[in-house]
Image (cartoon, rainbow, N blue to C red; front, side, top):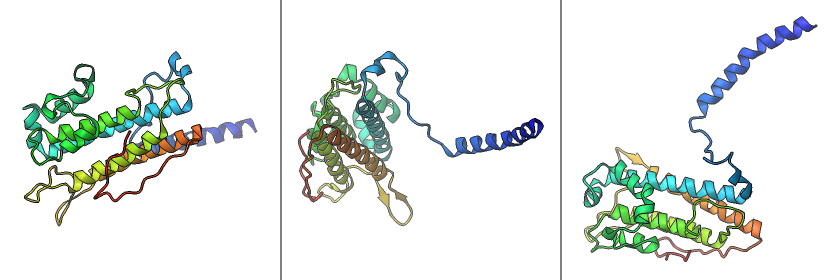
Length: 242
């Protein structure tokens, strides 16, 4: 009997290895891990705190990607800020926060929804991509209490997160529809024509909205607080407070 068991194990091991290799091949993107997940400060975090860490980090990564993609489609906007490549500009915006604090004279130091509005003003001659992305990022951070690392004593208002999600929807609609006096889009993003079909911007915004909505619902459920839901037409919608 022992020899039979050993034989079966020998036969099964290659199969297990094959399954493992196939699984690794199909999983192109690894599950994101917190840099400090094994350190002692994790003892001060609850499940909702870890969820907040992931949500704000992943949404920031989406904004980094959107900024890069917008510069690639609108290189003339990048030239308004720097002659350097788009990747370095994006790194400066997101990695240089301790130096610039998301305040840029070229966009009148505007943040939040004011910066988003600025990106679509007819008389604005500055970098519209910078105004748009800085507006979204600072709006996101403000709703999180201007934090990216959360602990048990932190409190995030689920209504603010819900409102931010609706504001992201409005901003995405403006990006795809706002035009100047000649009928041209202020910023090129999604593209659908006989030759090309590019909806990658729409998909990235959809991810952000989904993450933020899920987090808002989770917070409301945990705190037993109701969320006031607002129904607006995107074409006439106004940004909600956050």
